[in-house]
Image 1 (cartoon, rainbow, N blue to C red):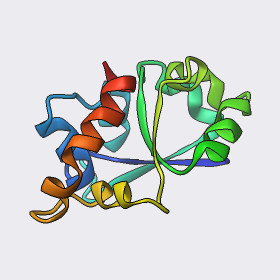
Image 2: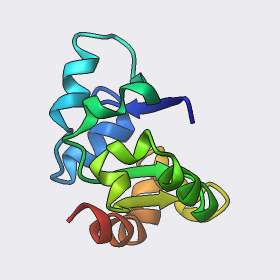
Image 3: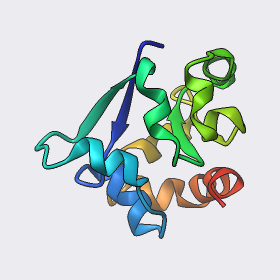
Length: 121
């Protein structure tokens, strides 16, 4: 739980959410700056810098969600404090949504939208 990884809009996972009408929090864009990487790393000690994150899509199961929500540093992020975490379980077919492609989007779009709408809206 010491490091958080965020996909940014230059990556397919991040741009997919933007394409669906969601915005990337300004704190993530500021930390990313002009990086050429497809993700950024944020130490959990810097969680207070993520005060504009109201909801998150996370790859993991419900046990992982509980672990995140129990972490006092991560609880500084409003999305964590308020339980607004959409969990993409890697052991289920919805995991294909984590890598949007011309095959995975039609196969997962309904379930993916249902999952994230409950958290992101």
